[in-house]
Length: 199
Image (tube, rainbow, N blue to C red; front, side, top):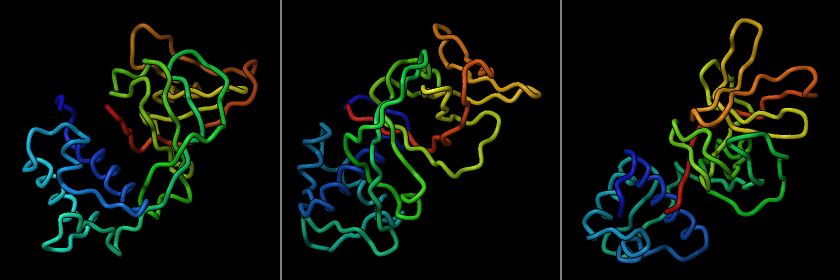
């Protein structure tokens, strides 16, 4: 499979395995290999062993489909509420289109959105990606946030310049956004804490 940033392949593999386990059909190592296009099962086993060591999976020895969700890692399911535009502002959509697993302690305060556009490409957030957003997290200068301006939502880097707030794009082809009173309501919906991508 194509080279991906460190940890990204493992996170996608984890989500795939967790989703299959939650559906009642734990995958075999070979099925994981075929799903992601790895050249060998050894690579799959390396990722799975790392997830077991991190406590995000448990393994029953001697069973090909022996991966389970350990008691210390009980995932919750977060709804994908719609699409958020990474570019010009567009009307936020609120139609759930699926669910993604997260750690149980994050589930109650999180939601997911699908990105449309490439204004955040410089921070490795691309069209079609799913961002996981913590709506209760403290937001600081430099954080990637989902913001509501009027009736429209966007994903940008938050810059606090004195009393000014700037929503900064990470692509020179897109303009930054500086909310004003004329735009209507301005609200930070949450801080992005994870990006998930399916190839």
